[in-house]
Length: 139
Length: 180
Image 1 (cartoon, rainbow over the protein chains, first blue to last red):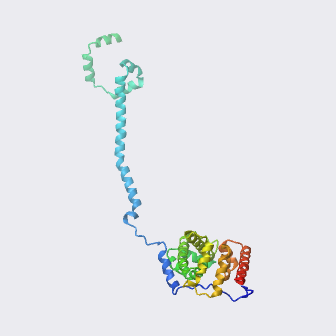
Image 2 (image 1 turned 180 degrees about the vertical axis):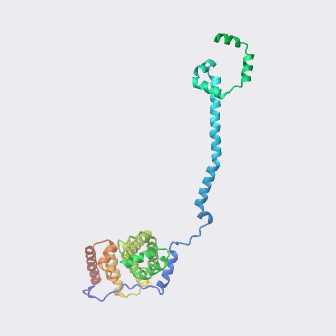
Image 3 (image 1 turned 60 degrees about the horizontal axis):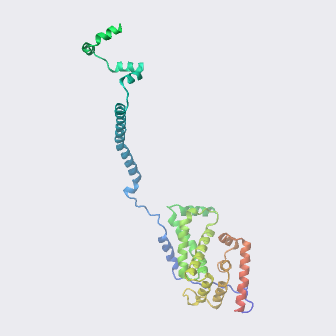
């Protein structure tokens, strides 16, 4: 075996053999292992999940509108009545103070808001004992 | 190259994928089998690694950019799978991959899927003593007769470096063959 040269020596094969029919069955073996791009069995729920969620969301919003509306209204009412009771109970505002705060505009508005029947006015005036005094003072 | 692009498109298209992949298997299963077998040496291990290789190829096809040839890309995956396999196997057995290779080669005669004479076994023993990279280059060049240009694409090493590796390997092998 002196002077062995790979180039000049007859080609040496690896000597490995393969079981009979190995390659015939190999393709099948691999194909069965591949992560399947299976024809997806999509349930009705899964397919319409998006729509169902959207519908549910819309429904929730729609149903909550009257509730929100109500809450907001109640809050507004509460606020004005609270202010009113606060002013009555916790302040020392006299009628004169309020009168002083009224501008001409407010007075005009009051006139419009409360149209007084002639008869009612007459009745009030006739029942007022100090009326005559007012009239004379006015003159 | 144009044909290869079309083939890759067929592999990616769900409608043609099945047939295209079967063609890929037919074309590559034998060369890749021998490539892996030369690295891991035993048939059952080769079978495992080859299956993993094709599954990986299938999974990563969509990331294949076509920058390299399909051929070299697949060989690269097979090589990595085979080397990872023998390293893991060596680790499990608490030994180095070189020591394990030598042990497998020594027991080659009892392998039912090895039909080699004395000189074939001797050559396997000589190869098993080489560093990993030289083993790989020698097996790909000598047994598989892969061109340096293709080997360069597969292994990501320059042709010059591959030739040098092969030259070193041949020298060591001839020395072993002459003195044992």
